[in-house]
Length: 252
Image (cartoon, rainbow, N blue to C red; front, side, top):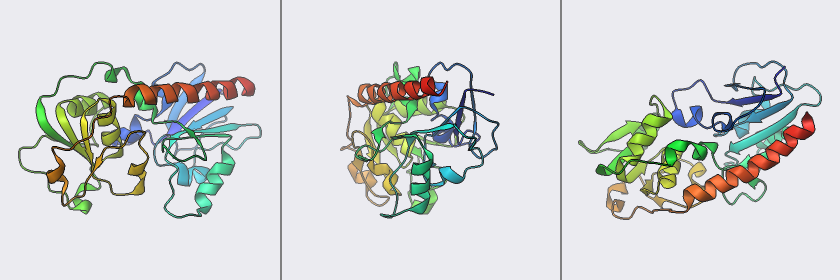
């Protein structure tokens, strides 16, 4: 059986979910990666995340509950909507180690989305447009966001991480209602405006400018730049990986 099994929402058109697993950014011995929603064979250590999967993690089809199996959540969103959540507490009990992507959730180690380790962030292209809009394919109409004709736009249901990052880097200012769109824009040092639709947007290591579906165009000159975002998130990722490596070694 494989020693390591990485699981997340891998079989999806949402590139933020598809590209969030640490499996894709480090070299791992004897490891596999699969969609969390599909049953798994036995494994020694399961590494789950990132993304907003923590609430339902305990009941996911891919979880292997063989005795002695270690369970690690990495880069998951841990901010719950209500003070008490049975599903979140179940996931906490399942996991031997939890790394939260939500800065400020002091219950857990900070472990931002591992996509920050992609080498694509090392050499972003120069901006070609004053403003671009990277939008969430499933939420934009629900929020009533009107993207002006002629403003470059791209959905998070795009073909690849490279396509998404090439588009985001093309804007001097990036407007987004996608969690990863905001995250990647901050990592690339772009002026960033976030239009949130839930509290999951409150946990970035450095905050963007926040706006609403009704007033975001009035904030286009006020996007926040976070020049330390990339280095800080990579340092946190490497720090959490050292704890993961230790747990893997102990489980071998």
